[in-house]
Image (cartoon, rainbow, N blue to C red):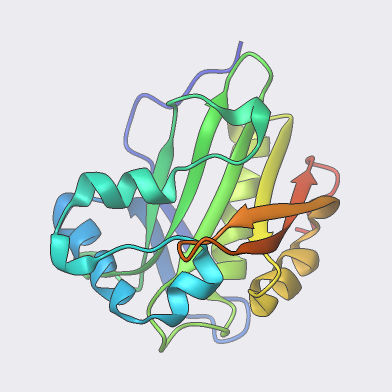
Amino acid sequence: MLRLPEKEIRLNIEHPKNKQAFVQAPLHKTHIEHLMCYFEDPELTEIMGFNFDPASKDTYKFIEAITICCHPNCQTENHLIFGEFQAPNTMPIGYQVVKGIYLELGVAEYGNATLDPVYRSHGYGRTAMRTILRYLFDELGMKKMHGTVLESNRSQLNMIKKVGWQLDEITSWKMPDGTLEPMHVFQMTAKDLIR
C-alpha cells in the first residue's frame, strides 16, 4: 500500500525559460492568510468555481474550499497542500493541492492556482504542476491523478493539455450564484505526463 510522506516536503524548482528558482513547500497559517487576500479579485470566483470572503480570515474555510473533491474515487480526508514560493521566507504566489488521496487505489485529485496576478500566465503554475506530478508518480507511486477545470478558465485548460492531462468527460459544476458551468474532468497516469 502507498504511504503518505512522514516529513515535511520541499521541492526546489527552476523555471525552464527564465531559470528563476522557486520552491514548493508546506503552507503555514500566515501563508494561508496571505493567499486568502487574493480572493478580493471577483475574477477568481469565475475561474475557481467557489466564492471565498477574505475578510472572514477563516483559514479552515479556505482549506475546506480548496480541498473539495469532485471525483468519486477521491472522497477521503487525505490532502497534501503546497505553497508556491519565489524564495524561502517569502509569502506564496499560489498553491498546489493533492486532495482526496486514496492510498489503496493509488489515486488522488489535483488542483492548483497561481493567485498572484504578477505571476499568472508566465509558466510558474505549469512548472510547479509538472514537479508535483513527477513527485506523486515517481516518489509516492500514485497510479492515476484526476483534475477538474471550469470551461471559463481557458488559460488553465490550455496549460494542463501541455502537461499531458487527458480529457475524461465534461460535466457541470454549481457556481456560487447557482448557475451551472461546464466542468472538464481530466485524468493522468505517469505515462501521460509530459516531463
